[in-house]
Picture (cartoon, rainbow, N blue to C red):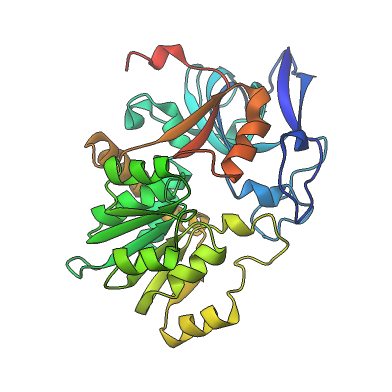
Length: 354
């Protein structure tokens, strides 16, 4: 059986910007038969995420993610349907997910890398398992629970950078659901700002490309900032930290503005900003959602419940076709997406009636 796959064609370099040409589509033969313990799966949806930029380097700078190898198939979060199974946990027609899904139209793999998912949790929107009812949703929820220190009734103000992205668009909503009294988002276009305030429940939004972020923050957060959900790092984060209150908290979700630079993670703050952080006792601890696997099941159920109750609005940017994986990745890295960036490889028509 001939299938298509995406391999790493070249590396952008530690300080380079990823481009479409870093990826290459090619054809490969799959065996006609599967072995005991294996499953054959048709890929439905694939995810592109900021952390993948680190996997494009020979050294990821992290002990929990491995680098992609040149001319080898790329992998990441995926959703698919079992077409044939010789694994005791799965039967034909099961929907499954994995964090290590090859960018390939069909795969034959050891069934142990997959987890079964229930379409009812997402009302049939399987791609949501790669976003709001998956790792980005868990990262937002558990990050706020573990590092945000939100106390009901204490009138806290939360600021979210990268606020229209996969995690940011959820974090602001979750902040309100967990009783933050004011949530302000920072993003890069008027369209995104309008989305945050008109659809996602943010109290205000700042376009960092227009006017002074510092002045707008002072106006929109008159009582200072108590919780900062940081997706971007760099100058924007330095500005927010400078306006944070005593004993406030940074949720270090990501630093996308720094991923094309050869710096350690988390990137060190400028000395003046670090002095403010220490003086005001602002926590800024590395957050890794994979360290909280015991909370995944309850977290997914909570996110699903909020979604079904209409309390959590989910946004996606969908691109079609395996051949567009590189373009989708490049777009996500430059803010071209609203909500989660997803690539549809093959739709599952049987779910359309759910």
